[in-house]
Length: 134
Image 1 (cartoon, rainbow, N blue to C red):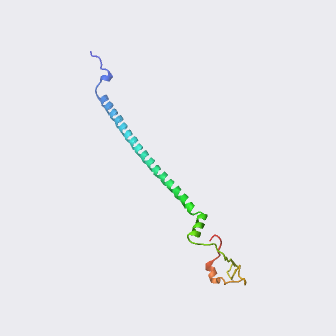
Image 2: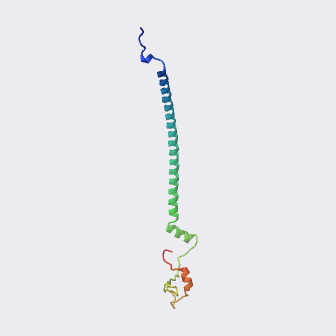
Image 3: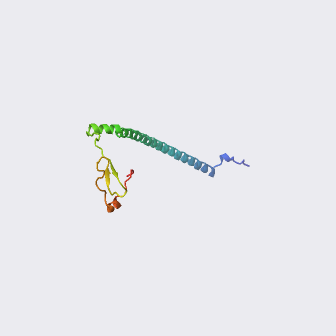
């Protein structure tokens, strides 16, 4: 009588499943490595994009600071005085409206107290009322 062969020495379907399992593990490892390399590539591109965004933000801050300095009231006043030869007004007249319906206007410095007449009734419908927000 012959002794039965141990399980680890048997040949057949078990070795086929073992090879198939190892091939699956190998394929999984390769795909995981590929995904990791693609992740590193995307991380590099993201860092590059963030660097570009930061440089554009720095440039925007510089331009905003320059715009603020160019729009400062003292700079505008000095430019108007030196380059455009503008001077402060000496004769200023103030016009007051007598009523809401624009029936007449008077100047503050005029001796008679009345000036040119305002728009008529038809024109007052189109013109409307002026306020500080306009």
